[in-house]
Length: 277
Image 1 (cartoon, rainbow, N blue to C red):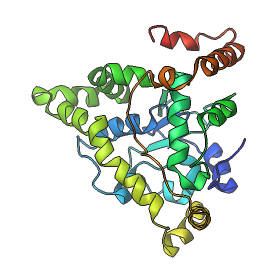
Image 2 (cartoon, rainbow, N blue to C red):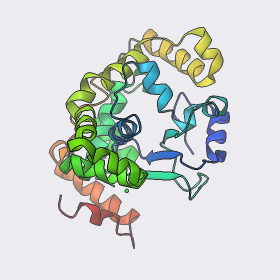
Image 3 (cartoon, helix red, strand yellow):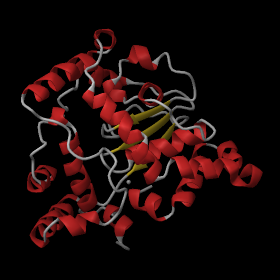
Image 4 (tube, rainbow, N blue to C red):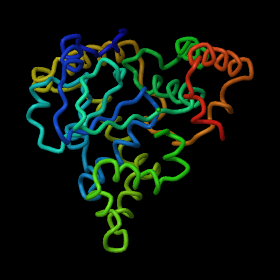
C-alpha cells in the first residue's frame, strides 16, 4: 500500500489492527467522496447540534485512524467517531460498531481530488495538472447528500440509532434545523475551511510533535514545502456539487475514464448508483 507523505508506518499498522468497540462510529471513504460533509452531519447529531468552535476541538473529536497514535484513541470518550481513508477490507470488523461508507461518481472525485492536492502544499502538487491526477487514478453517495440534504441527515441518524432519529424530529425539528444549518456547504466553507488553513499554515509545536510522530513528519515536510516556495492553493471545501467532472474533464479524458471503469467493474453494479447522473 502506498502511503501519503506524512504517514508513519507504525501508526498505519496500528490502524489496520485496531479493534472497534461497541458504539464506535467509523466513516470510511476514498478521499474527496464526502468524508468531511458526512463527518460534520454525524458529529452534529452526536453533539446535539453544537458545531465546533476551533481546530483543536474539531480535529481531536474526529481523529483519522491511520494518522493517530492508539494511545490517544484509547483516551477518547464514547461514542467515539473516527474517519479513515484505508480500504475497508483490511480493517477489523465489529458488528456492534457503526460503519458509514460514502462513495462518489469517479469523474467528480478526480476533479475534486485535483483541487485537494493543490490545497496541500506538503503534497508538492500545487502546480500539478488534472491530466496527472486522471492518469494516477488509472459506496450512501455524495450525490444523495447533495440532492436530499435533509433526507441524508435523517437516514444517517436512523442508522446511528432510533434515539438519534427521534431526537432530530422532536420539538418541531429544532435539532434537525441546527444539523442542516451547521452541515451546509456555506457554513462549512466559513468554518471547517479555516480549521484546515490554520492547521496547514502553522508548524506543529514541539510538544505536539513529541506526542504524535505524524506531526513531527508533517512539520518537516511543511518546512521543506515552504523552502521551495510552495503554498496552499484553493480551499479544502470548494463547491460541494455534483456533476463537475463532466464540466472539467475533456471528452477524451471522460472516454479514458469510462474505459478504465468498465475494466475495473466487471460483474459489479457499483456504477448503477449514478444511473440518473
